Length: 305
Image (cartoon, rainbow, N blue to C red; front, side):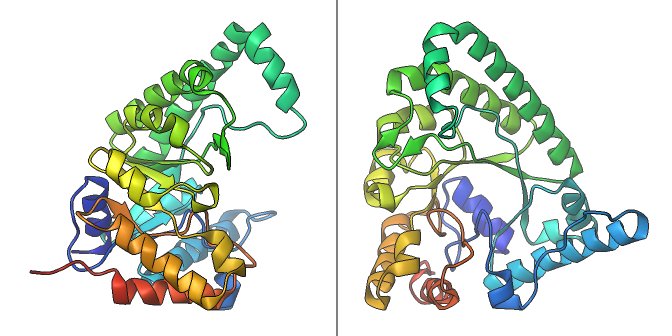
């Protein structure tokens, strides 16, 4: 199998050959691993802009080749088009981003939103309908440009549970999440729904919306990959669970044990994508991320028999 074929197998709840697929929502350790960064576009136009887009697309492929990623994720539609033009979609699943559902508000607007949920519910729902329409259109635009997968990265949960109660989540998120995922799927994309935090009180609602995968399975919120796999592993692919906090601050022994645990809890029967519980963020010791990649090579292989 190619890396792309392996992750498609996982997304379709099948077991890939040889090795568990991997990727990251973002790989921010570019300087540490490659000695360079992506280029910005500010002030660029014409030939200079085209060269920067090509550079970024080629860099995405370089990262995916070196780290054995199955998915290349970018929010840059010009890079999506360039990746397809380069033929990168033959080996890697090209992924964009399109979410329009209600996420946890920032601290400045949290109180105001909490009041409006009760006093102006109909107005909020009209806004959510419009946001979902926009996300459907943006997702379709990326799919037409060549994306075969879309992530949805609105966060719903804190470490101790969702921002909205399950009953309110059913009113203000689930119908819109379901409509958006259904549209992305109808338009031809695999859908990976990301949210950090403790998803257990709303796990059934998330799964009912039929994403191909749930991303994070956050151990820092005490979410057990083994338990989620037991409960819904026959309905949705699971992605993530390697503890980002430990990768940054744990001992080598703690990090090694956590990585191996994630592999052993997630891999059986397929339907698992191995990655961190958030992103490979700037400041994470690069040797720890390399340890994660090395242990995947050692412990992340399926029985070929």
